[in-house]
Length: 397
Image 1 (spheres, rainbow, N blue to C red):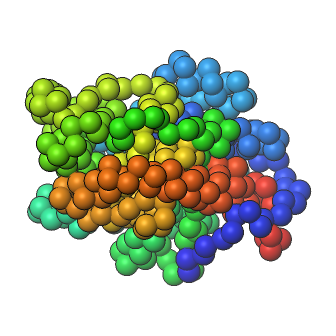
Image 2 (cartoon, rainbow, N blue to C red):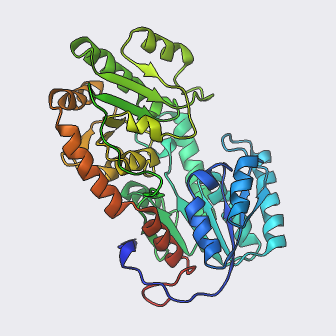
Image 3 (tube, rainbow, N blue to C red):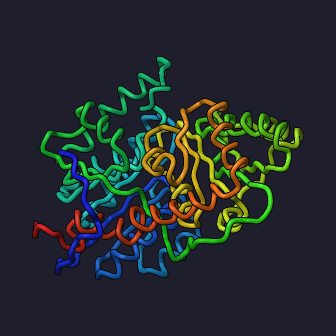
C-alpha cells in the first residue's frame, strides 16, 4: 500500500508527549534538512534526542537553541567495513537502551539499517524510516558486478531493518516501487509519499530575475552522477554560439573516486565557458544572480533540495528525467525535463531560454507556485508528524 496524502488537509488533535530519537549519518544534515521538523517536535512538547557521527559545534549549538539534545555515535557514512558497522550497531543499541525513546526516526541508508535494527533489539516499537533516496547503487546505471552485489546486500539488510517498521516514508515513486519489488517491507507496511524535505518559504523568497544575458546555475557536490560533466559539455557548445550567456557551477569538491576532479574544473574555466564559484553555506545570493537553475542529475535523488530552493526564489528548472528530479518539474510549465546523460538535449533546453528572454520569467512564476503549493516545509512536516502520531492524525489512529 502506497499512500499519497494531501498534507495541507490534515487536522491536528492532541497527542501524548513522547521521547523521540532521530538518527542520521551526517550531523550537519540535522540543521540543513531537518531543523524545522525537529523544532516542530520540541515545540509540540516532545523531548528530542539527535544522534550523528560528527561533533559539529555549529550544528550542536543550533540544535541546542531549539532544545534538541545531541549525542555522537561512531558511524562511517561510506564504506563496507563489517567490523565498523557492527561497532555502530552495538553503540546504537546501548544508547537506545539507555535513553529508552518512545519513537525512533532514521534517515539515509546506514542509520535506517543499523538504527532500526538496534531499535528493534532495544524493544522500541514505534520505528520509522525516512528514505531520502535509495542512491546510485539502485539506479539503472549501476550495472557493474560490484554494484549489483552491493545492491543485493543492501536489499537484504533493508529487509532485516524494516521488519516491523510502522511507516516507511519515501520521496518518489521509483523508490517506493523498488522497496516493494525488493520485498524490503511486508505487504501490510504502509509506504507514505512525502514531498521531499520541503523548502523554507520564509528563508527562500522570490527575487527578481537578473538583468542582462541569461545565467545558468548548477549547485551540487561535484559528483559525476550529478550531471556536472554534461552541464559543462552543454556550456562549451552554447558558449560558441552565445558567448554572452553565463554558465556557473557552485559546490564543493568531493573525495569520491567518482567525483569531478579539480583538473577538469580548471580546464572548463580556462575555456571561458564555465565559471566555478567554489562552495558556500548560503546559496541565496547565487540563486538571485541566476536566471535558470540546472540539475541534470542521474544519481537517483530523493527530491533535490537545491531544486526546491531555486523554485521558491522564482527560478525555472532544467533537470533530468530521473527519480526525484522529475517529481519537481511539470514539463513545459515550470521548466524542462531532459534525458539523463544527454548534453545535446540539455543544451537545447538551455538555448530555449537564451533565445526567448521572457521564458524564464513566465516559468519562474510557475515554479514559485509549485514550490508554495506542493513543497512548503511546514506542510511537509505536518504530514510527517501526523503519520508518526506526534501531531495527531485525520483518521484518529
